[in-house]
Each structure stands twice: as structure tokens, then as C-alpha cells.
Length: 348
Image 1 (tube, rainbow, N blue to C red):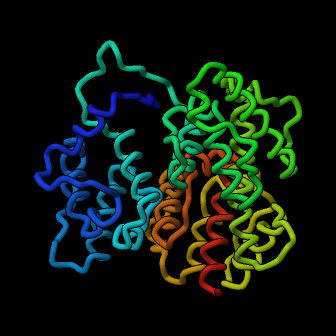
Image 2 (image 1 turned 180 degrees about the horizontal axis):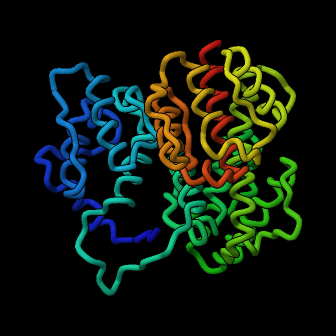
């Protein structure tokens, strides 16, 4: 995938076709009307979107709008309730994902930087932006190198862990010696990772500062994993850290209690590749939510359906269909963990 970084003035042009301008991603988008218009403006000609009746309730209208977004493979991050409630962080992530997939801009000119982005990088970046981090992350290997996004993520995982007195401010980074201060921030971020028992052998602050790709991804993955598990821990009300085996046990117990024959041994289990354990688990969490006539012998189509339905029942799934088909254990863990979060929220 190509990630295109444009001037801010160009980004806003994607909204010009709608006479009603927006100034925020909360109150201005609650009725879905701007989204409905935007999707029709940027949708390719070979995709047929369904009409969205404005007579529906706001939540029904938002669901119809998101069904159109799904046709464009862009239903991610938000639920109808997030739209109606004006969840600014998640709506911003939704629009950013639309823009990255369908920028609807003129061809890049000479001052445009075109960057190849992997699926993994896109997943991590979208996850960060959905949390409302500042500065906004356009590219992992340059936008993390002052430490501030990392500090925000650490604070989300364990509030209070960041000693902001040790953090060099953004203003100080703009002054003489700012590069050294940014490196100090990155060193402190690595120290915080060690406090959370991250595996950071061979990773130093200079690697984050210089955007060393494999080492930066190693840090970011552990942040995403820790964030997901921290949500589970908060919902469980216990002090014990949730482990991978706890999630696997929950999956199998949930499937068994619902009378399903599917199960998983771990997050590398080849049985996951056809998405059947994920699909059955969704139906176990919300009975009769799955239309099994939509389950095919095509693994990729099943994975797309599984992720679509997971998001529909409220799971904040950041993984992509290919991650399930290829049984990417990192992303598979997050899929099951997000579904576990939905189930635990039901019983609160």
C-alpha cells in the first residue's frame, strides 16, 4: 500500500463537494449526512453504494452508512453508536482511513512524498491514531522519533507511569540542541517499556529516534499488545496480568458453552485460517448475529466477513482479513482479545 503525505491544504479538498462544512469530528457528523455524501464522492465507479434513507433513526442511518463503507473495505474503528455519540477520536480514525484508501486528490506533484506502507505498519498507525495521539501519526519511522506519541501510549496502558517532568517538551525540541533532547525522550520511552517488562533486548532510544524499522515495530507491537491486555485486565477487575493462555481458554470455553465444535490450541493454530473459530465465537457472544449462509469455502471471504461482523458487534478490531488467513499470531491475538473485551463488557 502507498501512504501519501500531502500538505494540509490538500487534505481538506476531499470535503469540498458537500455544501455543509464540518469543523469537528463530534457534533458535526452525528447525523451521518456528511459521511453519506463523502462516501459517494470518493467511491470508485465499480462499487455500487446503497441509498441511505434519511428517515431512519440516527443509529439506523449510521449503520446503513457503515454498510456502504464496508463495500469500500473501509468499515473500521467505529460503530453506529460512535457516530451518533460523536466519538471524536474514533471518527477521526475512520476518516483518516477513508482518506488513506480513497484520497480523491489530483496526482502527486513534486513536493509530495510517496511511501510504501506494509499491512503491519498501517495497522499500528491506525491503532495509534484511533486513540487520539498527538502529533498525528502519518509515518511510523519519523513521527515517533520525539517520543511524544510513545508517552501517550504508555499513559493509556498504565496511567501515571510517565513522569512528565522527565519529558523534554515539544517547544524545547525546536530550539538549539533539540535533536539531543528528542533522543533523551526516546531513551526514556525505552526505559518505560522495560518497566512494563517489554522484551527490548538490543533496542535503544537511538533506534526509535533513527527510525530503525524492525526495532521500532518491535516496540510498537508490544505497546499494542499491552494496551489490549490492559483493557481486559481493567474489565476483569483483577490485579493479575491477562496472559495469552487465559484468552485461549476463554475462547474455547465460550465456544464449548455455545455448543460449537470449533476450538483453537493457540494463536498459531492452522484451524484459524478459515475463520470458523472467529465466526463461531462472534455468534456465541451475540447469538444469531451470524448468517451462516455467508460462510464459504473461500478463506479470505470468510475472514472479511468475520472482521466485518466482529466490528458490527462492537469489537475494536484493527487486524486485517489477510492476518487471519495467514494466521499472523500477533494480529490473531488482538482479534480474540477484542472479542473477549466485548463479551466482558456485556456482563459488567
